[in-house]
Image (cartoon, rainbow over all chains, first blue to last red; front, side):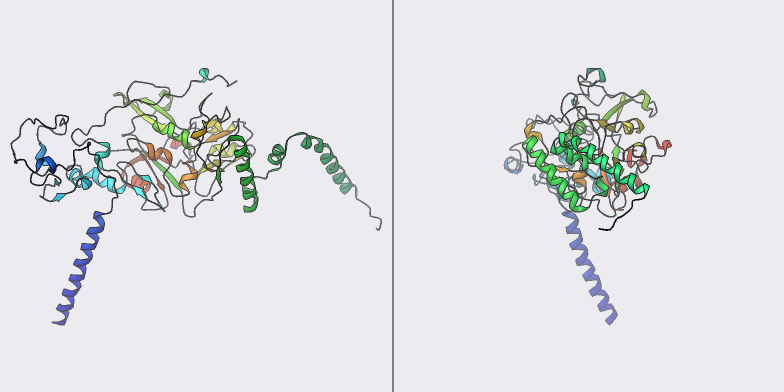
Length: 168
Length: 301
């Protein structure tokens, strides 16, 4: 009888510990705030007074967003939560903040999420030891609605040897 | 004083030394104080800590006179149990040369006539194997990445078995305990043997005085790294020795817009570079030369 009692105490402690650890994992990735367009967040400042319309349609608002991210299979409310617009929604129904959107991206891009957690995909800045290391969210580099990276202008090339004047 | 006889050998030695110093006196007195100090400076590895401190205080003073800026010259030694390694994801690099220019800013490289660039981004046609002879580094399209090309940034590979160190006639370059190949610019005579020996073209000759704009100086410098160089010495990438020995990422890692550049300690199993080596397909450039570079290129599957 006593053994069983101890066993339960042990289990309880274990459960508490796991709670603590899961909380730590939440704060594990110190990311800067997500890059919202100006004045767009909190979403609920407009959406709170609106009725929820789950029908897939062409919107009159948000015309600057052009969905190029598996657009035939997906629509706004697959990721945005209809009831509480200030949250994102995982497949399981769990609501997350915009600051933890990597969980949402990781649902489809699991291998990339794994690399990102290890610090391989994406960029780390600051100190790798003895200081603060900053992570970036997926959406700091990829536009969530059109994630392909756009081409950029390269910096100028080095001079060719014959263009160098004071090399003699 | 009792009469003492010199042997012939002692006499010749003392006589020749006296002659040598006598002859060199007008030579040393004719040049400035700075030149004498430089001429009599010991090799960096043979100096004691106090001598090094003296040298850097002298350097800081000299830089202040010359450039009007308060530099802090570090002589921080290698951290024990470190061996720095670098990873570069070729499937993500878009050849934008942001790293090249971040490197120039961080390392106080000469800006004009000509710019001294420590990173060379080469462009290869897709589909041909990595054959560096077909590469080009003067490409200048309107937009990168281009569809039919891949880009390979090449800088000093910090070889474990560096050919540049072997050929230096004055031992002005050596491998530090943490694996970095460094140059003592005061000891370098500018013969460029090392540039000829390096199979990666990782070394650069400084043709010009560092004509850096006044507000662009990076004031946190290391003696073996990014301190302002004199003209006519050979310089090279040190993985930003002034940053990494303090635990900070190199400048090219921080600036890369695609996050292709990875850096870490090869002896630390938790480091990013070890994850790359364990989980990705890596290769090193010109492995057949047995130089054992610590610069790992890798592909995403």
